[in-house]
Amino acid sequence: MKISYSEKYRIKHNETDFNGELSLASTGDLLLDAAGLHALDIKTDISNLNTQNLTWVISGMKFKIFKMPCIHQEITVETKVSAYTKFTTQRDFRIFDSQGQLMSEISSEWLIIDVNTRRPVFITEILPQLEQICQPQTPVEKYKRLRFSLLDNQKISTHKISYPDIDINKHLYSMNYVRLALSVFDTKKFSNKKISTMDINFICEMLSDQTAEIYLNDQETTSQIDIKESQSGKSTFKAEINWI
Image 1 (cartoon, rainbow, N blue to C red):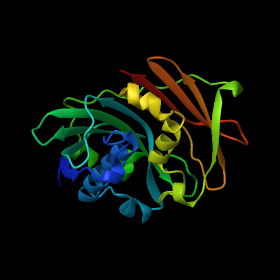
Image 2 (cartoon, rainbow, N blue to C red):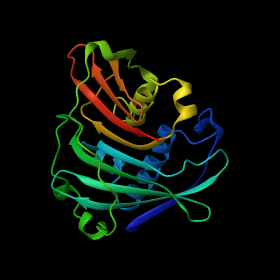
Image 3 (spheres, helix red, strand yellow):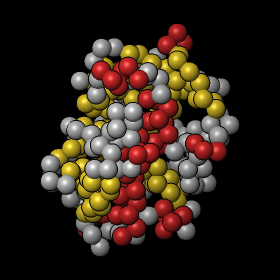
Protein backbone atom coordinates (compact mmCIF):
# COMPACT_ATOMS: atom_id res chain seq x y z
CA MET A 1 0.00 0.00 0.00
CA LYS A 2 1.66 3.21 -1.21
CA ILE A 3 1.40 6.21 1.10
CA SER A 4 2.03 8.48 -1.90
CA TYR A 5 1.79 7.94 -5.63
CA SER A 6 3.41 9.37 -8.75
CA GLU A 7 2.51 8.99 -12.42
CA LYS A 8 4.22 10.28 -15.58
CA TYR A 9 2.21 11.88 -18.39
CA ARG A 10 3.11 13.26 -21.81
CA ILE A 11 1.03 16.28 -22.75
CA LYS A 12 -1.12 15.54 -25.82
CA HIS A 13 -2.31 18.11 -28.35
CA ASN A 14 -5.96 17.71 -27.31
CA GLU A 15 -5.04 18.62 -23.72
CA THR A 16 -3.58 22.01 -24.65
CA ASP A 17 -5.08 25.41 -25.33
CA PHE A 18 -4.38 27.73 -28.29
CA ASN A 19 -1.10 28.76 -26.60
CA GLY A 20 0.12 25.16 -26.78
CA GLU A 21 0.04 24.88 -22.98
CA LEU A 22 -1.82 22.33 -20.87
CA SER A 23 -5.25 23.78 -20.12
CA LEU A 24 -6.37 24.10 -16.51
CA ALA A 25 -9.29 21.69 -16.99
CA SER A 26 -7.00 19.12 -18.65
CA THR A 27 -4.61 19.58 -15.72
CA GLY A 28 -7.50 18.61 -13.48
CA ASP A 29 -8.20 15.54 -15.62
CA LEU A 30 -4.62 14.34 -15.06
CA LEU A 31 -4.82 15.02 -11.33
CA LEU A 32 -8.03 13.04 -10.97
CA ASP A 33 -6.51 10.18 -12.97
CA ALA A 34 -3.50 10.05 -10.62
CA ALA A 35 -5.80 10.27 -7.59
CA GLY A 36 -7.87 7.38 -8.93
CA LEU A 37 -4.77 5.24 -9.45
CA HIS A 38 -3.59 5.93 -5.90
CA ALA A 39 -7.08 5.24 -4.54
CA LEU A 40 -7.10 1.92 -6.40
CA ASP A 41 -3.80 0.97 -4.76
CA ILE A 42 -5.05 1.74 -1.26
CA LYS A 43 -8.49 0.20 -1.90
CA THR A 44 -10.40 3.45 -1.65
CA ASP A 45 -11.40 3.70 -5.31
CA ILE A 46 -14.91 4.35 -6.61
CA SER A 47 -15.44 0.74 -7.69
CA ASN A 48 -14.67 -0.42 -4.17
CA LEU A 49 -16.98 2.19 -2.63
CA ASN A 50 -19.79 1.45 -5.09
CA THR A 51 -20.10 -2.08 -3.64
CA GLN A 52 -21.24 -0.29 -0.46
CA ASN A 53 -23.51 2.17 -2.30
CA LEU A 54 -20.98 4.94 -1.69
CA THR A 55 -18.93 7.22 -3.90
CA TRP A 56 -16.39 10.05 -3.76
CA VAL A 57 -17.33 13.67 -4.53
CA ILE A 58 -15.02 16.68 -4.60
CA SER A 59 -15.90 19.81 -2.61
CA GLY A 60 -13.05 22.19 -3.37
CA MET A 61 -9.68 22.77 -5.04
CA LYS A 62 -6.91 25.35 -5.10
CA PHE A 63 -4.57 25.57 -8.07
CA LYS A 64 -1.28 27.42 -7.61
CA ILE A 65 0.43 27.63 -11.00
CA PHE A 66 4.11 28.51 -11.45
CA LYS A 67 4.48 27.32 -15.06
CA MET A 68 2.17 25.35 -17.34
CA PRO A 69 3.50 22.34 -19.27
CA CYS A 70 3.60 22.54 -23.07
CA ILE A 71 2.55 20.10 -25.77
CA HIS A 72 4.66 16.89 -25.85
CA GLN A 73 6.32 17.79 -22.54
CA GLU A 74 6.67 14.98 -19.98
CA ILE A 75 5.53 15.72 -16.44
CA THR A 76 5.21 13.81 -13.19
CA VAL A 77 2.14 14.15 -10.97
CA GLU A 78 2.73 13.30 -7.32
CA THR A 79 -0.22 12.89 -4.94
CA LYS A 80 -0.83 12.07 -1.30
CA VAL A 81 -3.45 12.43 1.43
CA SER A 82 -2.27 15.21 3.75
CA ALA A 83 -5.20 15.50 6.19
CA TYR A 84 -8.58 14.04 7.08
CA THR A 85 -11.54 14.59 9.39
CA LYS A 86 -14.68 12.56 10.05
CA PHE A 87 -16.22 13.87 6.84
CA THR A 88 -13.39 15.05 4.56
CA THR A 89 -9.95 14.21 3.22
CA GLN A 90 -7.42 16.61 1.75
CA ARG A 91 -5.54 15.20 -1.22
CA ASP A 92 -2.56 17.21 -2.45
CA PHE A 93 -0.85 17.20 -5.82
CA ARG A 94 2.47 18.51 -7.10
CA ILE A 95 3.44 18.62 -10.77
CA PHE A 96 7.11 18.44 -11.77
CA ASP A 97 8.83 18.75 -15.14
CA SER A 98 11.30 16.12 -16.38
CA GLN A 99 14.15 17.95 -14.59
CA GLY A 100 12.31 17.81 -11.27
CA GLN A 101 11.33 21.49 -11.21
CA LEU A 102 8.05 22.24 -9.45
CA MET A 103 5.44 23.52 -11.91
CA SER A 104 2.31 23.69 -9.76
CA GLU A 105 0.72 22.74 -6.45
CA ILE A 106 -2.92 21.80 -6.06
CA SER A 107 -4.97 20.89 -3.01
CA SER A 108 -8.36 19.17 -3.12
CA GLU A 109 -11.00 18.27 -0.54
CA TRP A 110 -13.21 15.18 -0.86
CA LEU A 111 -16.32 13.69 0.75
CA ILE A 112 -17.79 10.20 0.60
CA ILE A 113 -21.55 10.25 0.04
CA ASP A 114 -24.30 7.64 0.08
CA VAL A 115 -25.39 7.22 -3.57
CA ASN A 116 -29.06 6.91 -2.54
CA THR A 117 -29.39 9.75 -0.04
CA ARG A 118 -26.60 11.89 -1.59
CA ARG A 119 -25.57 12.73 1.97
CA PRO A 120 -22.02 12.57 3.41
CA VAL A 121 -20.99 9.63 5.58
CA PHE A 122 -18.24 9.25 8.18
CA ILE A 123 -15.06 8.68 6.16
CA THR A 124 -13.13 7.39 9.16
CA GLU A 125 -15.62 4.55 9.58
CA ILE A 126 -15.39 3.56 5.92
CA LEU A 127 -11.62 3.95 5.41
CA PRO A 128 -9.59 3.08 8.52
CA GLN A 129 -6.46 2.90 6.32
CA LEU A 130 -6.39 6.72 6.18
CA GLU A 131 -4.43 6.73 9.44
CA GLN A 132 -1.70 4.65 7.81
CA ILE A 133 -1.37 6.59 4.58
CA CYS A 134 -1.94 10.21 5.71
CA GLN A 135 1.18 12.38 5.34
CA PRO A 136 0.60 15.73 7.09
CA GLN A 137 4.11 17.02 6.34
CA THR A 138 4.38 19.89 3.82
CA PRO A 139 0.68 20.15 2.94
CA VAL A 140 -0.48 22.27 0.01
CA GLU A 141 -2.46 25.42 0.84
CA LYS A 142 -6.18 24.66 1.15
CA TYR A 143 -8.80 26.39 -1.02
CA LYS A 144 -10.77 29.41 0.20
CA ARG A 145 -14.49 29.33 0.98
CA LEU A 146 -15.93 31.80 -1.50
CA ARG A 147 -18.80 33.92 -0.18
CA PHE A 148 -19.53 36.29 -3.08
CA SER A 149 -22.81 36.26 -5.01
CA LEU A 150 -23.06 37.74 -8.49
CA LEU A 151 -26.06 39.65 -9.84
CA ASP A 152 -28.49 39.14 -12.73
CA ASN A 153 -26.77 41.75 -14.90
CA GLN A 154 -23.51 39.78 -14.58
CA LYS A 155 -24.92 36.70 -16.32
CA ILE A 156 -22.76 35.82 -19.33
CA SER A 157 -24.23 32.60 -20.74
CA THR A 158 -26.27 29.45 -20.13
CA HIS A 159 -25.56 25.77 -20.77
CA LYS A 160 -27.95 22.81 -20.66
CA ILE A 161 -26.35 19.80 -18.98
CA SER A 162 -26.39 16.77 -21.28
CA TYR A 163 -24.73 13.41 -21.93
CA PRO A 164 -21.14 14.64 -22.67
CA ASP A 165 -21.10 16.61 -19.38
CA ILE A 166 -21.99 13.73 -17.04
CA ASP A 167 -19.51 11.48 -15.20
CA ILE A 168 -19.68 8.07 -13.51
CA ASN A 169 -21.55 9.60 -10.57
CA LYS A 170 -24.30 10.70 -13.00
CA HIS A 171 -23.77 14.39 -12.35
CA LEU A 172 -21.81 17.20 -14.00
CA TYR A 173 -18.14 16.17 -14.02
CA SER A 174 -15.99 18.41 -11.82
CA MET A 175 -13.62 19.47 -14.59
CA ASN A 176 -16.57 20.30 -16.83
CA TYR A 177 -17.56 22.89 -14.23
CA VAL A 178 -14.09 24.34 -14.74
CA ARG A 179 -14.51 24.26 -18.52
CA LEU A 180 -17.83 26.09 -18.21
CA ALA A 181 -16.26 28.66 -15.88
CA LEU A 182 -13.35 29.38 -18.20
CA SER A 183 -15.64 29.57 -21.25
CA VAL A 184 -16.71 33.07 -20.15
CA PHE A 185 -13.34 34.52 -21.22
CA ASP A 186 -12.31 35.33 -24.77
CA THR A 187 -8.92 34.33 -26.17
CA LYS A 188 -7.59 37.85 -25.65
CA LYS A 189 -7.67 37.30 -21.89
CA PHE A 190 -5.47 34.22 -22.18
CA SER A 191 -3.20 35.93 -24.72
CA ASN A 192 -2.39 38.72 -22.30
CA LYS A 193 -2.60 37.05 -18.89
CA LYS A 194 -1.96 33.74 -17.14
CA ILE A 195 -3.71 32.15 -14.18
CA SER A 196 -1.63 32.40 -11.01
CA THR A 197 -4.13 30.84 -8.58
CA MET A 198 -7.66 29.51 -8.83
CA ASP A 199 -9.84 28.71 -5.81
CA ILE A 200 -12.80 26.46 -6.58
CA ASN A 201 -15.88 25.57 -4.51
CA PHE A 202 -18.06 22.68 -5.73
CA ILE A 203 -21.26 23.49 -3.84
CA CYS A 204 -23.91 21.07 -5.08
CA GLU A 205 -24.61 18.66 -7.91
CA MET A 206 -25.97 19.51 -11.32
CA LEU A 207 -27.81 16.78 -13.20
CA SER A 208 -28.67 16.01 -16.81
CA ASP A 209 -31.28 18.36 -18.34
CA GLN A 210 -30.70 21.07 -15.76
CA THR A 211 -29.49 24.42 -17.08
CA ALA A 212 -26.41 26.18 -15.77
CA GLU A 213 -26.38 29.99 -15.69
CA ILE A 214 -22.84 31.37 -15.69
CA TYR A 215 -22.08 34.74 -14.06
CA LEU A 216 -18.84 36.73 -14.19
CA ASN A 217 -17.24 39.59 -12.28
CA ASP A 218 -14.09 40.27 -14.30
CA GLN A 219 -11.46 42.69 -12.99
CA GLU A 220 -7.88 43.43 -14.08
CA THR A 221 -6.16 41.02 -11.68
CA THR A 222 -9.07 39.01 -10.22
CA SER A 223 -12.11 37.28 -11.72
CA GLN A 224 -15.06 35.68 -9.93
CA ILE A 225 -17.32 33.08 -11.56
CA ASP A 226 -20.63 31.88 -10.16
CA ILE A 227 -22.56 29.00 -11.79
CA LYS A 228 -26.20 28.74 -10.74
CA GLU A 229 -28.97 26.25 -11.46
CA SER A 230 -31.56 28.13 -13.52
CA GLN A 231 -34.77 26.96 -11.80
CA SER A 232 -33.72 27.38 -8.18
CA GLY A 233 -31.23 30.20 -8.71
CA LYS A 234 -28.89 28.50 -6.26
CA SER A 235 -25.15 28.54 -6.72
CA THR A 236 -23.68 25.16 -7.62
CA PHE A 237 -20.07 26.27 -8.24
CA LYS A 238 -17.91 29.31 -7.46
CA ALA A 239 -14.37 30.12 -8.54
CA GLU A 240 -11.98 32.99 -7.98
CA ILE A 241 -8.99 33.49 -10.30
CA ASN A 242 -5.92 35.64 -9.72
CA TRP A 243 -4.16 36.67 -12.95
CA ILE A 244 -0.60 37.70 -13.66
